[in-house]
Image (cartoon, rainbow, N blue to C red):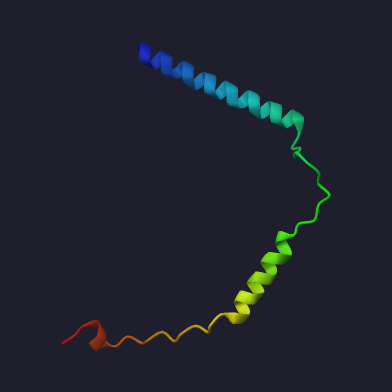
Length: 74
């Protein structure tokens, strides 16, 4: 009986703490630290790398056809 009460108390405190933190985050808004007027240099770089990979990739190989003899050797 004591273990059940202790477990319920712990669960109640965790739920209370999470709800309190959630409400505080809503009031503060979703502000990020730092400035927001910077250029994203990763997007053009990733696009160039993907384009280069697509140009230099090898064509797909033909899939060998399965025959009855290759599936069930005699």
